[in-house]
Image (cartoon, rainbow, N blue to C red; front, side, top):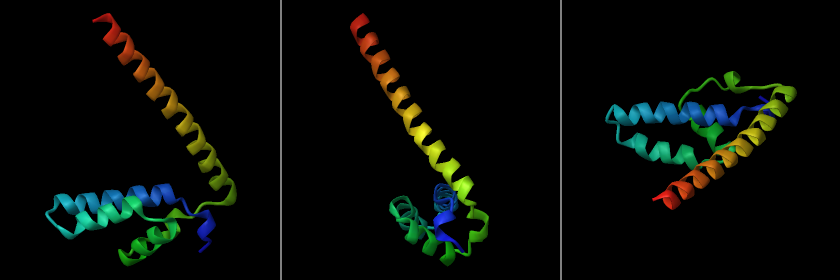
Length: 98
């Protein structure tokens, strides 16, 4: 497996869903696992996924797909920043209106 072409964001999301569901099924150990997933490095994500028998082939991308994912992440951060600034400006205007 080519670890450079793994969709780590999707893997992290799927692991978070997996342990989140386990947490609501009253498995207390999943709380620790969920927090581990949130702060895990890419290497640690792979280890956690293997330990929980995830099929890592489902997370393989091609080099071109990986570039697209990185570009989408860049644009997502950009739009998240715009949204945050817009919301902050709206809050200021609302406060000034009172």
